[in-house]
Image (cartoon, rainbow, N blue to C red):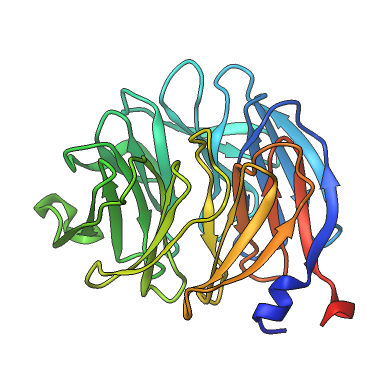
Length: 315
């Protein structure tokens, strides 16, 4: 099944789970699409079986808290996550026996971005200490550090060869992973016409576009090669300046974001037109949103976790 305007409009809530007492701050699908994991402000890590469409287990990170949880490269049984309590160390956890494999200390302020390499055991983290650190899952020592001169959100490109940093909510800097110590090889500024913080940055799967999420009721799609603005999307509710996560569909053709009123808004990256507004009946703002990399489903979450499926009868 191909993702089209009409398929997106047909999406309906398939399952809603109320496993958490506080907001879900992050959700990630495993690379094979068969599992999902969520982290939440009540210190819970919930594992979901996507094929059965139900929660499998709940693990706890009471001491450190849990945020920005990510599956590691090609592994459905291990995750990396940042802390929102106690310290700013990143932790590497085995989901099978709920034991820490390794700690990655170094940041001196909260980690606000975490991105796994799509090709190997490397990952990067951006922090309010105004550094981006490069790590290898096999070593607790930081492999490298760059000072992009501002608060950075960052992400690998789909080939794992470069990473982009959105710095101080005004510039994007591109680094070669193998030569990041030389500084960025490209940099472009882009400013929104209203004051807002950049809260996330993602590449499309085809590597041609960069998506900037903000806390200001606007998101932007840029040309990943020259930084030109392709689209600026608004018209969804975010009056309280919440960090709402936006994402591309796996085919790079659409961009989606949740809103304060529990709806999901979808635009075409080709035409720039809004193609769907989907009501998830979320009682609170949709903080996190992810499309499954392999299956025709996506997840949205406030304190509830909701999985969506296309309704074939509507097509």
